[in-house]
Picture (cartoon, each protein chain N blue to C red):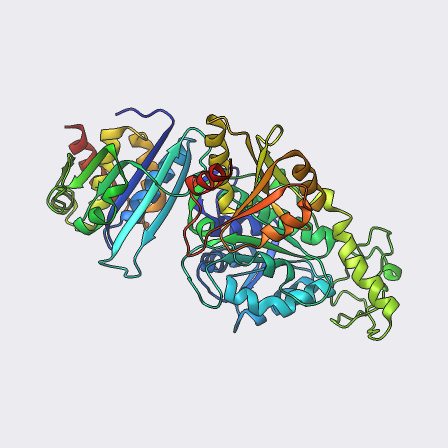
Length: 176
Length: 384
């Protein structure tokens, strides 16, 4: 899937899944490539369990928007997150879901991200990196190397290896 | 000097973080604050960075204490800043006036959220426009800057310090929750490439005798540093050139207050900045600032595609206010629209500037959502 001028990407899940960190890392990767990028978030007051949304807009032009209005890509990691924002995905937009946890009512692609995270790193909370890897493999919105550099910059010290491992599992899955 | 964040490259950071980094690059070495959403990240960053640059970051008992403390720090020779949101900004108003009256360079960041009172802590608004200009009592002037992007938040923070130092005045950086929390790509220049202005110090003992005197004819008195060998007196009471209270002398009061206002009014050309988009041949003008200006730019571009001659004036400084410039635009266009996230604040200044030469219509929005380009377009199309 190529992209020309602007790509609006929304991550949706529940608190605790690292949805916002996934958005931040994607944004950082775009910034590393010199692209214009904006990232905003919307979440409930609960640190776990409430809906959690991260928006990333990447463009070669200046960005005037401040949130995703019509998403080109929606990455849904939980049913609650999907339900809360499915209307914002373009009709011809790309829907990526955790196939174990989200049962969408439209065409989609995806993989059991949480299960893949648990199997590969032993930690379900690396699900965000698995999904990010998958997204980047499928869309080519940023380069794999930029994403890995962004992960190194943004994840807590000492967890770089495990996060990159999860990212690569997702990336590989996305190339299949 | 080693900085505790990357310089000379782009980074992907929040508005609040950008403000903190820019303040440190501008030479700020004293921060006092009280946590409040959506400005707390500025404090967090300052608490982290200040000890690493030999600066001070201190949590005060409240916002009154915060601004009082930075005024003291500024008189002790430090560049100083505080940051807050609406409820805290209200508490700061008395001392903001004290900073005006004592001509103290400080930077006050107000990250607006929905009000009045504690209102909508996590949602953006532009409800503090009038408060930022007229919140403190008495005749006065100060400078208010309004960024629309994270890069602008960065750049305008440096500008805020430079203007505060140059004109010996408090400067308000008026931003909002959305810009504070969004992340964008921000270029941090190498420190040697940033223009940094420092306040004028007294050149000698004689000059130091007049900490409030227009001794250079530029309306800006040199500012002595507390504890550096001069006897001086700093008071919020009306004072003469030496700082001595003169509270019943009309002439002294008028001379002081007019100078405090004129030093900004007569330097508008240096202080006031703005950008225009497609305004040259516009028949409809949008006048906007802050986060809403982003939607306004999009609205102008989309209206142009449909053949409607719209243009935008994006204000980066909302005080001092360039009434004449608004008047010139009003002579050119049929109608001016003012979209803002309040029920009409800057709108009134625009109307005054337009002075009946063009109709001015407010596009208000409150509740926390930002105008979409369509909100603006639909309203304009109704009038076409």
